[in-house]
Length: 221
Image (tube, rainbow, N blue to C red; front, top):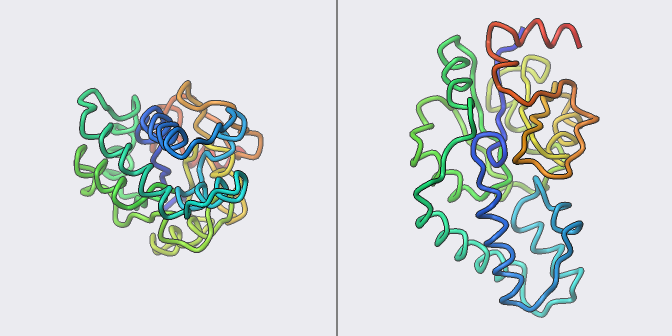
């Protein structure tokens, strides 16, 4: 029986990828590097600091990873504050309310910085549904390492086999499976070139995993 649901944020709760993409590429331009699409897509699900460490190593940059993080966050903050059209992904608020009203414990486990998480949660009044929020930026390891999901399950108060993870990225799915947690891969048009083959269940509509269906779906997989 499922007792807790661990949500990723970017690509699952909100489609902030266009803003992240623009912020990263403005930062790339500012420091004078040319990042291929393939290399950029490999970042999905990883924390900003780990991405910036990879950039410094790959391009032998004189800038520190921390300075790149600051540049990226500067651009992202500007886009976030000016983007009045930003909305939650279709159906996710109904799913969150459905789980919450049926007594499931909800935890957020995102690679985003806590400042970005709080911006989203405040803008859409989501704190009332979640008992805890974990940021990959505050942890030692980044997805696909399982640390964030191990800690999220612990924060829920339930065993890993009583939790599920909802993820949209290859790295996130790998992290959930490495934590030995049932993983739902959310394959939407917002996700680009991600591998869902390791997910236990793949969906493209949140109605497919509403509370009345989720336990039966897990037992059938």
